[in-house]
Image (cartoon, rainbow, N blue to C red; front, side):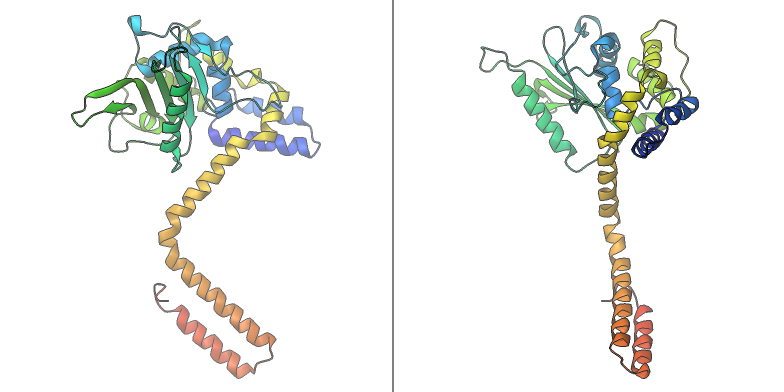
Amino acid sequence: MNRDQYAAMLKDIGETHKNGGDVHACIAKYRARHKYMYIYNDVIFKLLFGNPENEKITVDFLNAVLKLDGGDCIEKVTFVNPSVIAPFSKNIISDIVAEDQVRNRIVLEVQHIDDPSFKDRLVLYVANHTVSSRVRGEKYSLREINLISLQMFDAFPESKNYRHCIRLKNQENEEFYKKQTVTLVEIPKFLKGKYGNDNSRLAQWLRLFDGLNNECPVPVPEDSLFALLQEKAKLSIFTEEFLVSEAMRMSDHNYELYVEKKHARAEGLEEGRAEGRAEGRAEGRAEGIGILESLGVSSDLIEKARKIAAEKARESPSKV
């Protein structure tokens, strides 16, 4: 299912639960319609890629995103904040945080909305994890930090690349510090772009996710990690108790709606100012005429006020 369908399902389950309805029948209805969960939902993504039971899936995906191979590959990970299916729990935090075999730190998150604070938060995350990665007993020795953000918006709209590796560099584009890396993956750009010839492991993973979200799973080899994820992402695996708990919470969806509304207001502010002024003046005139009527002013004066209001309404909205 896609993002909207997932939100609609949770809303329906939540309302059914609150009203004392048949939650089991409600969930069965959605299980008949949809086979897979929405992969990019924050909680679902963490349960799939931040769960120790799925370590092999996570390791393969991280190597794909970071383009690691050979001796540079991540071999295993230890989750600093393991995610497990725990209905009605409140301990799932925003990022997947893991350490590889040499204790270098990898942070993985999904970002749906291009909020103005997004870049600030990324820099703050890197700073916080840098402090946390300090080698004990060595004042200035740090381990590597890789922060990965899967984004539902473009960070570099003019670039043809959908994957971006960001490090500290000088004006000659020479790397100054290689232990802090931010990797951004622009999901919509990949899905809408002409990347049919991209057979990288990352591209294969992204196509797999898209297939599940659209209920059109891509063909994968049996017993592969791709097949394992397809099995783990099935709606039927998630218990009724878990779905009810997520429906009652819905914090991630509600926050996204809030940010979307805020962006819509910001984007429409300029073009809406003139229209808003015109509407405000019209409402003010109507209110003024109503006051005149309530005060018992003569009908002749009220009619004159209406004519003046009508003439003003025909003026350009830009005139105050």
